[in-house]
Image 1 (cartoon, rainbow, N blue to C red):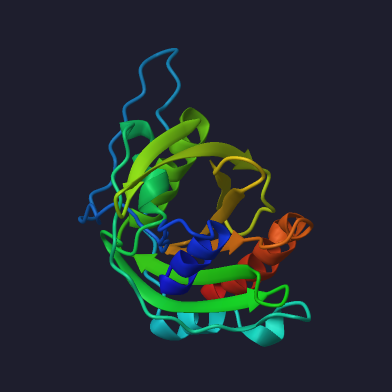
Image 2: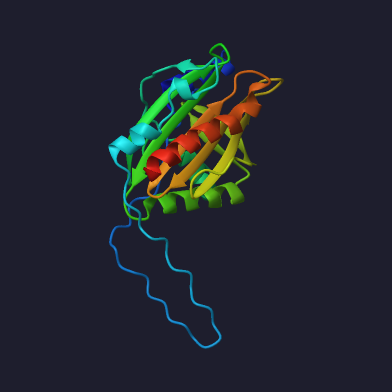
Length: 241
C-alpha cells in the first residue's frame, strides 16, 4: 500500500507514530519450460502434474482490470498517493508471506496498474493493484499466501521503531478467477482502538489482483466482500480478454 494508507493508520492511532505500507509480493520466476516427468508404478496413482506456466498479462490488460471510481459504490473518490518501498520482517517464518503481501517490493513480478481510493467521508481506504509474473510465479505466490493463511495465527514486526503484533484471521472472500485468498490483519491498540487491514488476492493465469481495504467506520467492515467482488470480476474479465 502507499503512503496514504500509512497515514491512515497513523490517524487511526491518533498520537502514535505507527504507519503502515501495503502493496504486493511474490516468489521469483523459476524460469524454464521443462515438463514434469511422472512414472506410474502398478497400483500407485500418478503424481499431480506441476502447475503449467501461464503467459504474462499485457500492460493493457492490467490497466483495463484495475478499479476506477466509476466501478465503486457511491461515496468513493480517487486518492492518489506517493509510493513507498518500506518492507517488514516478521518473527515467524511461516507468516512472512503475509508481510510480503503488504510490501511494496514484488520479487519476480511486474506491476501493471494501481489505484487508491477513499470512502465514508475519507475515513475508509481502498487500494487495488494488479501485477503479473512469468512462468509459474503467480501460482507460486498464491500458494505461499494460502499456506500462510492456514498456518499463521499472529506475528510481530517493527514499524518505524514501533513493535506491533498483528492477529491473523482468514476471510471468506468471494472467489474470483482461478483461486482467491482473503485475510484480515488486526492490531489491538488498547482500549477501544483497533485497526484492521483486509487483504484479498485473486489469480487469473499469470496475473494477480490484490485488494486492501481499511474500514474507517464501525459498519464499514462488512463492505470488504462487495469491494473485493467488484475488483475481482473486473480483473478477471480483463485478464481473460
